[in-house]
Amino acid sequence: MEKLIITAALTGAVTMPTQTPYLPITPQQLADEAVRAAEAGAASVHIHARNPEDGTPTSNLDVYREIVARIKQRSDVIVCITTGGALGATPEQRIAVVPTFKPELASFNMGSINFAIHPIAERYEDKDYKYPWEKGFILGTKDNVFRNTFADIEYFCQTMKQNGTRPECEAYDVGHIYNIAYLVRGKLLVLPIWMQFVTGVLGGIGSSLEDIMYMKSTSDRLFGSQNYKWSAIGVGYPDEFKAAALAIMMGGHVRVGLEDNIYVKKGKLAKSNAELVEKVVRIAREFERDIATPDEARKILNLKGKDKVGY
Ligand code: KMH
Ligand code: ZN
Image (tube, rainbow, N blue to C red; front, side, top):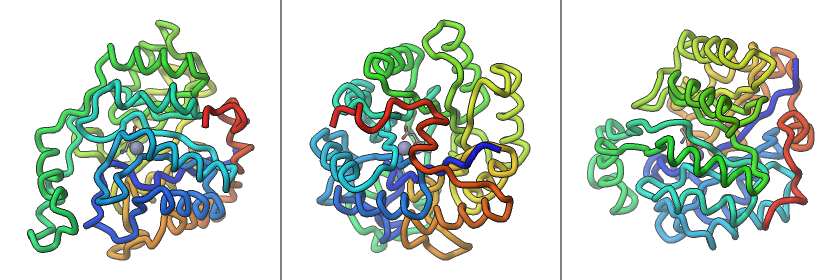
């Protein structure tokens, strides 16, 4: 089997500082986390930016610049910048990272969904919140549509093409795989596809083994098994590690990170993204699956290289 590409999604735009004190917020913290995750075995890090003052997700390009520049200085890890961005950001704000930084990889969300975390609010009383914005933010996701219309998708796809950025296609449900097939037919995307099965988001498909197998068999049928590579993102605990184990066994790849899950064991918060990566490395070793270095992952994913980014 191909070596395993591990991605660490360091902070995201949905996990709240109240949920875990280990969530990296500032560019310095994000760079430290990226370096440690890479040392633990991550070939790629997925980046969102947050306002260093209070942890609110931000589209501020100066904050992004500081994060990616610090990582580039200290590590060879692949940097995949989000185009999912922050909740409520416009498509123009979300895609701006691509022409600005011309990254090797960028996330590319394959359809609109209800993206919600409001049930999490039941776990907290008002006094528990670290920042005043968090409760309203969590409850507000009940009315949130994560917008990715076909017009947005086409615009994002063209922009990535123009900037030599490889799309990391995020499929939250089976219909999104059909959307990828539509883009392939229209020659907006070319095979082989790099795709993530994002399972367990409230609003998308679940994380049962059957769900993941169905995403895989649908992809095999639509593209042919040689024409795409996939990675599993199980959102929440223990889904993150169940999805990871399945992907390791089936020849897929794995994403973990505090964006998707904050626990390393039942009830035990992960103290860093590296700790989540280390657990995946241990599982992979048990299945005799070798771990890809950043440069090996660049070859597998056919990326342009760290020297060709715009930062
Ligand atoms: N938050 C993840 C479930 C993006 O950044 O574009 C999906 C994600 C999307 O990572
Ligand atoms: Zn993300």
